[in-house]
Amino acid sequence: MATNHLLEIQQYGQSIWMDNLSRDIIQSGELENLVKNQGISGITSNPAIFEKAITGNAIYDADIEAGIREVLPTYKIYESLIFADIRNACDILRPVYEATNGLDGYVSIEVPPTIAHDTQATIAEARRYFQEIGRENVMIKIPGTEAGLPAIEQAISEGININVTLLFTVQSYINAAWAYICGLEKRVTEGRDISKIASVASFFLSRIDSNIDGKIDAKLQRGVDDINDEAVLRGVRGKIAIANAKIAYQEYKKITSTDAWEALSTKGAKVQRLLWASTSTKDPSYSDVMYVDQLIGKDTVNTLPPATIKACADHCNVSARLETGTLEAYTLIESLKEPDINIDINKVMDELLAEGIDKFVQPFQSLMNSLERKVKLLSPV
Image (cartoon, rainbow, N blue to C red; front, top):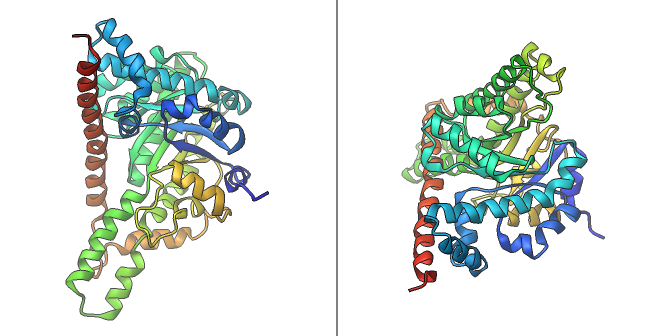
C-alpha cells in the first residue's frame, strides 16, 4: 500500500487540518473518513468556504424552510446553518480532541468579517459564537488587526479558544502571540484554569508570493538593463512567503523561551502554535505541495484545502525543513530593500491584510444576498 504522507508528517510534530467544510462531507461520511484514516486532525472554515458550501446547494433547503417558518431574519437563518455544520464537525473531531488532550480536534469558525475593525463587536460575537455553538473543541477566528488584538486577549481570558487569522507580517504574529499570553495571564490573576484553552496563529503564505511575484514580473516585463539584476529578481520569485514563515517560527521559539511563557507553562498552558494558511500554490510552475514540504516542523499546524491534501498524501517529500535555511531566509527578506529589487514588504503586507478582509467580506455579503433570494424562493406565497 502506498504511503500516506499526511500521516508521516505527524511524526514530525505537525498537525494537518483541512481548510474546507460543508454539510455534504459531514453527511456522506467523508469527513469522518478523513479524520479516522487520512490524518486530518482539525477543520478551518471562513465566509468564502461557507458561500461555496451553501450557495446553490439543496442540502440546506429543509433548514432554510424551518427558519422561514420560525420567521427568522436571513442572518439568523445563515447562523443556524453554519452553527449546525460546525457542531456536527466538532462532534466528529471530538475523539481527536480527547485523544490529544485538547491539542487537536478543533473546528474554526470566523466572526463576521464586517466587524474586523470593531473590538467590542468582535468580543461580543466571539463570546456569543462560543456559547451558542456549545462545543469545547470549537475555535473562534479573529483577524489579527489592530482592533482584533485586544479582542483576542479578552476572549482568551474568558476561556474561548481562538484562531488568530490573517497574519502576514512577523510583527503581526508576535503581537498575536503576546495577546494570547496576556489573556492567559489575566485569567491566572483571576485564579482560573488555563490548561484547557487553545490557540493557533494563522500565518498566510501563497498570497504573499502572488503579490511579490506580480511586482517582480512587472519589473521584468518593463525590462532590466543588467542580466545580473534579472537573475536577482528571478531568484526572489516564490521564496518570500516561506522565508517569512521560517523567521516567524524563530520568533515563536524566542517567545516560548521567555520567563512570561515559562510561568504560564508551569500552570498547564498550551503553546499557541503557528498555523500555515493559504497553502494552495497559485503559480502552476511551482510544486503544488511546496508550502507543505518546506514548513514541516514541531508544534505547528498546516491547514490544507482538499486538492492540496490529496496532492500531499500522494507526493509530499516529508522532512523537517522548517529550521533549515534560516539565515538565508533573513537574507532573502533583507534583499527586497536592495535597489535592483526595491519592494517594500511592509507595504505589501498592509495591502494583503486589507485584501484579506475584503476577500472574506465579499463572499459573506454574496452569501447573504444568495440566501435572501433563496428565502424568498422557498417562502410560501
